[in-house]
Image (cartoon, rainbow, N blue to C red; front, side, top):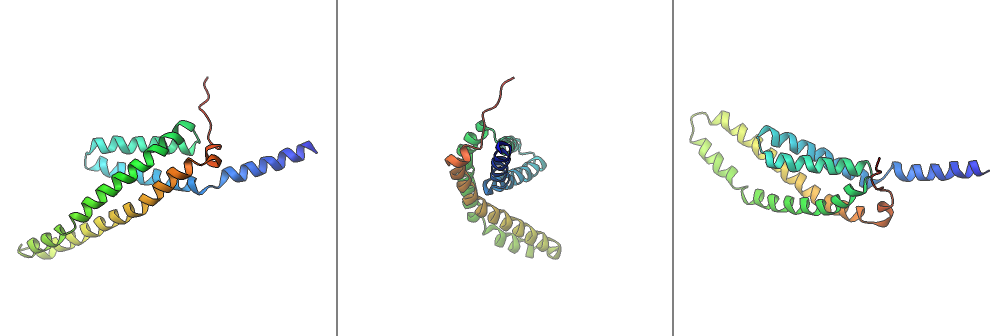
Amino acid sequence: MPLMVRRDAAKQGLLARNFSVWGIALWVVLLLAAFGALQYLKIAAYLYLAVAFAIIVVCAGCVLRQEWARRTMCVLAPLIALWMLVSGGQMLAAWGQFAAARESAMAQPMADVVMPMIDQAQRTYLLGLIFKGLEIPLLLWLAWRLGRPAVRAQFHQRQRG
């Protein structure tokens, strides 16, 4: 009988640990940070690349349920959300430059080649704005959720030696 109780308790603990929405949110943040790191590497923005790498390390620590990573993510997630809000505002303020680029391209002899490039850049820009808009509430929710006692209990201190 004690063996059966242990097995039931183990199953409940396993189910509670296997599926968590905050874990999926962490993976989304991890994947977007990796994508951002690749983009920053492509344009040689090494400061942003270092920050993206730090975010990847913290997300990986959270996936491994390390307490240091949970505490760090609780601080880091709102800071990233703030950065996304500011940079998204700057992107919105510069949205009118696409119209100016179109006008300038129309005066060029190869306008039929340049216009699709401007359209592609505008679509990419719009996707960036959409991702920022979706990730801001996700990051704020993640910071709140990682601070909850039920989630906090799932993390453990790093074991020494």
